[in-house]
Length: 312
Ligand code: MG
Image: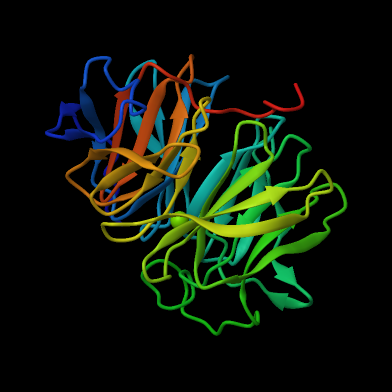
């Protein structure tokens, strides 16, 4: 396999579309850098504060890549990654990965070993876990659409054995896996509000693609599920929330930014369709964007929401 691991950083043409005064904080230097290109499809960025590096997925090449903030170097973090898609970091600083080709969610331990956290529900294989987030109580929430089993490009062609495309909550201590939402067509990106009282989940294949919002009860069950925002260009994928409660959602023309109430307040247009994003850097104000074949970064003047924001 051809492994491209480095490319010079370059500033790319982009456009900041402000629709509302609440679309603020991007007025640092307005510079978007392409940190790496050469993947087949970039996804799942996650920042590791202790190591000062970013890990992200190159799904078709079944590898995880790593960008080192201190040097700008890019290398292969893991190959074969099981066609890893979404990644996150748990409360102990460990990598949690949706291996959509392997139809499982795993955790990479501090010694480098990989623990399978979930690979079946009610005795049948999961579809292909797509994206994942960790709540303050350590529970792991992930979506399970079938993108990794509908062909060999992004996973392994195979039958869907689950009756639906669920949003799951996993208790990593007991291994208990619970369906928290069962009425999605293609559940995809997900994120909690800063106080973790709301959960936002994208449904990529609705017409139009949209994001729904749920009330999160303390026991981890959900209520509500109203449509929060609809996509006016392509489809939503990954999403993140900042400390002001604004939602930053990946779409085909760039990132769409929504106020906490759901108003579209601005866009950051990018040269490739965006799949996912995350906040990182020592101050949490580097916005990392996985789009098309590339990894982009932008320094902003606000910070991404981090757990445990409610329970700290
Ligand atoms: Mg996704």
